[in-house]
Length: 110
Image 1 (cartoon, rainbow, N blue to C red):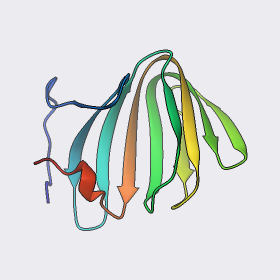
Image 2: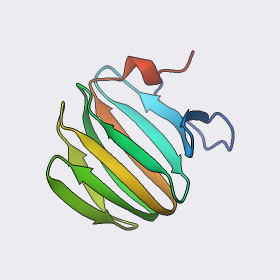
Image 3: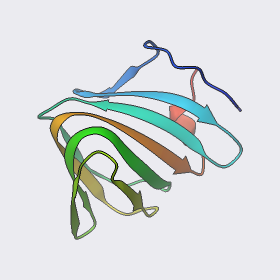
Image 4: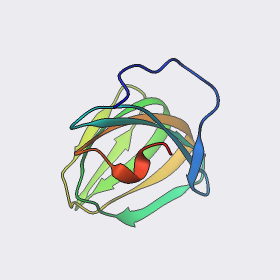
């Protein structure tokens, strides 16, 4: 469990080419991650057993969740149900904050 996190420029890992992530805080049931997404990157279609709620801080991207398409701009948010296939096209350098439930063990720091 990590209750507080101060802002730091370091600590990001590369999830995929063009996608960097840093887990910020987590508790018993949820985990919050910051994603830095490079313009031109495509997050391939995938699914996982975690519900995922996101908020776009800066940038522009298109999200595909199941059969739905959403053009996300700063201030927009979304919810991806557990096991739903989803992907994203990144149109501008972007920052997104995502909360996962249950905690993604694979996102916990070593």
